[in-house]
Image (tube, rainbow, N blue to C red; front, side):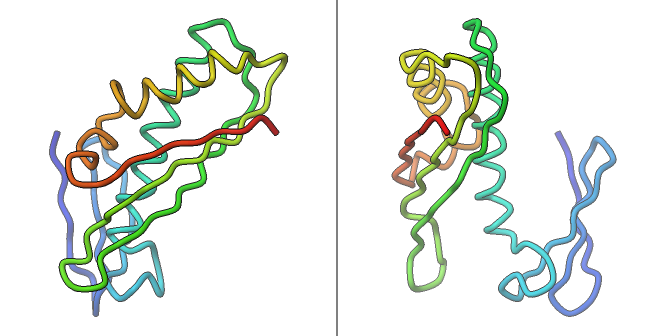
Length: 132
């Protein structure tokens, strides 16, 4: 996998993925676009959501929606690393089985989500979920 990031102006950058997609990032606290750290947080939520939805569908669950709400804590001084991240999944569907949800969510954070596993080496990763 490859990517490139080009400086545009001030603290704005454009990230370009190998697959041909672009995203604007703002290194000035996210004033005009997501900051790089916000992108990392969203990447964890996106990667884990893919696992949860796939896990639920694979177990025969009729999931209709999955919203991952992420909260985090960071160090106060540079480098302002994440110290803790919680991913809360809000799910809707038909007769969702709580055991299937717990398995899909747990396996994502402990076994499948590349982003969460990479972050988990130095970050306390937790999860929670609810059926809306």
